[in-house]
Length: 231
Image (cartoon, rainbow, N blue to C red; front, side, top):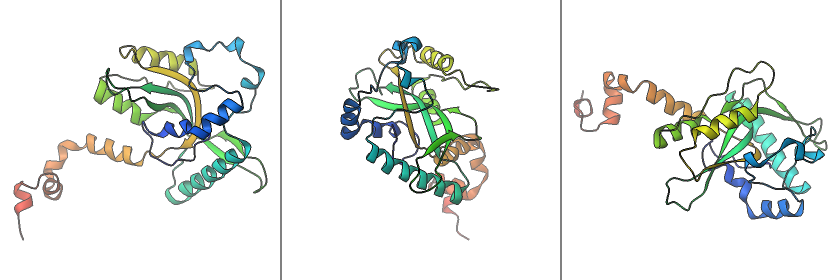
């Protein structure tokens, strides 16, 4: 499905795929979403699931609108910030905050950097791989490490092609203690920003040095001596 949302990467990003109109389109087009990855057998897939075209739950008109928005926004991000924010998310993790929570959260798993292009405004879009390497959702990895003590695997060095099934098996083993969680086979094209996450990681990395700077100390702790100093 093509998501037109521009929220930062995290646990809310994938919910755009669950809009009521998207679900109606899915039923109309006889496409199944939210399917457990472990239930998929390659040999049982229809031909249109194994060719070089992506299936979508959206109608042609809504797909064109979403892709145009994604195309323009990703282009602006690349030109203004020098950062590619367009990714194809492979697989979703369905997870819960606690054993008693009824709130279902969805988070993208493998993020593949991609590019959208078209020859003219009336042409169809083509999707291709970007030069950057795929990654396991870094914000999700940190969330699960800090809040649940779970370590999602990093992707191995890729020489030719990514063995997605192997990665998903590793992830499935990593989340095994959470019996209510599951992986689904959904694929989402969307805009994902890592800028805030990069800032977060820098703060974590250099936290021990903050006390050496009076300005940072004053900002972090208003009761500190530095905060009470007046020149």
